[in-house]
Amino acid sequence: MTRNTTASKPPAKKARARNARPKIERAALKLFVHEGVDAATTREIAEKAGVSEGALYRHYKGKDQLALSLFMETHNRLGQMMQEALSGDGSLEEKVHAAVKAYCELADEDFLLFSFHLVSLNRYLPYDKRREDDPVSITERIIDGLMSQGIIPKGDPALKAAMALGVVMQAGQNKIYNRLPGLLVQHADAMARAVVAVLKSE
Image (cartoon, one colour):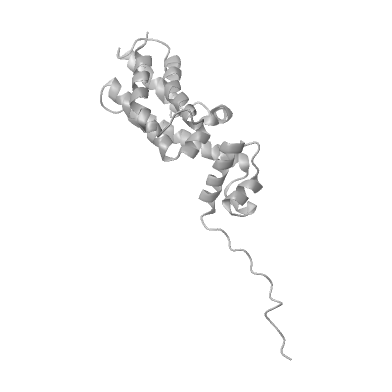
């Protein structure tokens, strides 16, 4: 009688998931946007990503670090985008249109990531110390320069920046909640005109 040597072999270990990080980030974004950061767990994120919970911890210390990292990815890109658009050549109207269009294109490129950034501003901005290259500081500094040059009326740069950013951010929020149809970029012209009107207001 021959012995069956294959029956006693131990089960093969599950292969480590390749490219786990992007899978983890997409799964986390979906859970964070639809359930909230507090409600989501690392186990849920890992299961949705199709990886082990250990794989998540190889890339991030935990859920909070993952969420902050995803927020800052968009926040830093917005700062760079604002700097490039508003510091370029052209009239006030052309610069504003370039900035608003860039904002809309960034949103449309990855609306899930953009949505998470927008709905998480109150939660994560306190962790971002005021710096020269954050989106709000860049906007305030450029508006202050426009006032000094006499291109727009004198006033409080911080207030004007808040009002101008509010035009595009509120439109973005309305799109998140399905109150604004289509791609955001198709509304860029109207939003740019509104921002210019805010900047030129007394």
